[in-house]
Length: 140
Image (cartoon, rainbow, N blue to C red; front, side, top):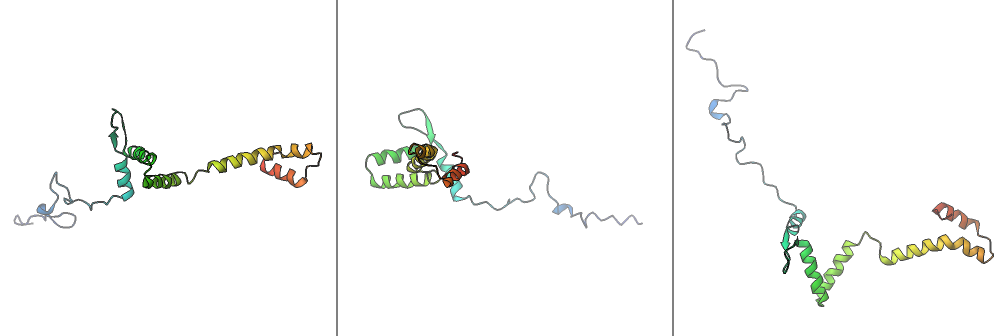
């Protein structure tokens, strides 16, 4: 080999020195694309900020402060606030049974537990289909 020839310093898996990443500098200087926040996460982020309560040194979340203000307006007779309170209450309690449903379920349970004794007090034989229902539903 002659002394004039130098081995290649660039090629496959060896980019030229001028094109290699510089130390301390990112390979993607502009960075990745910015993500767009989900609207509901933005709303929850804003409403979770804590704000001071007027006339007090305690802090509550923005959501709690707005709820108190809405309640105050509704109690003063503001019709829009009353409608909004009703709509929020309906959404907030949609998965919970109403008080009427709870009371009627309790009453039905009480009726089922006392049904057999009622038939016996009347001097009547307790029907077989009711015995089977009670056993199936756990009221026996």
